[in-house]
Figure 1 (tube, one colour):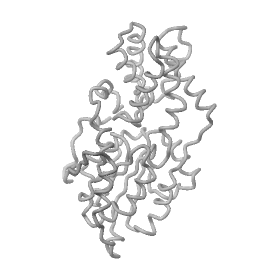
Figure 2 (figure 1 turned 30 degrees about the vertical axis):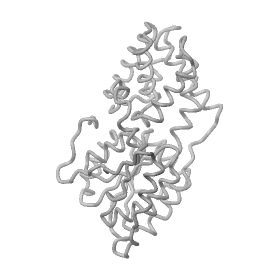
Figure 3 (figure 1 turned 60 degrees about the horizontal axis):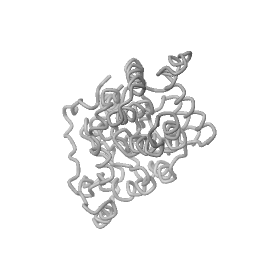
Figure 4 (figure 1 turned 135 degrees about the vertical axis):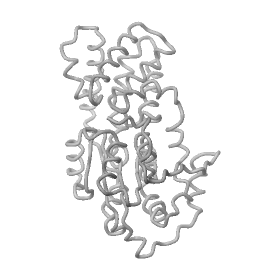
Length: 336
């Protein structure tokens, strides 16, 4: 499988430059700066222009990442892995890694590995070290570090063994999620955007990438009545996001203007690897982002003027480049 931390751009596509527009006093000023730049109305030919729109499903179209961590994985981590530390501190660390860092959209087991390594760096523990070594072996051996793939190897583990501790965390997380009984919802603005896309931008072709198994993702889209709003959907079985995008381009899409809409480091890296424009959707600002995409960024993109909007929000740039030392703890496992 391709390692999207080291893969280069596809020949023949010019690599997109990240925006240089950075507001020093935060996202609000940056948003005002973007909104102050007028976007001319599209003429009929521009509106009908053919282009490829690649969407990240989890956390961008569906509010599926934050609820699962806040209601399951985070409280389970604080309860089972604090080991003499403040549970609130442990919960805050896991929250930061899972939702506010480059590890957003990474599998929960990879986030767990990063959290344990960070704690062990500052609060060394023989017990924690044993769990880290066991977890490294599990995620390395798995084709994809998904908990469903790893769970069978944990059953029957001896009491108090590292495998048993990891199993207890997964079971506790799932129990908490079952109690919450919360189903991932589609962001209202994302639904409106997709349902009106063919009418307002008839040249658009939509591909979707999901970090959950393809069959589950397809069922989620179909249950929401949106199964007809895209051409193809791929899950991690078909490779990571950059590998999927490379495959799509090799199948005849490389001549079309390409826009990637995502909220994770993997989505951004995929766009960079193939020289595509990227529109970020930041946690907590999803509804606003979809409205801005429809009303301002997409028209500017079709006019060849999207760079003037400075779409790389300061919050998303922070997600990409802050805490590099933390993400380096688990980079070898993120492309699996």
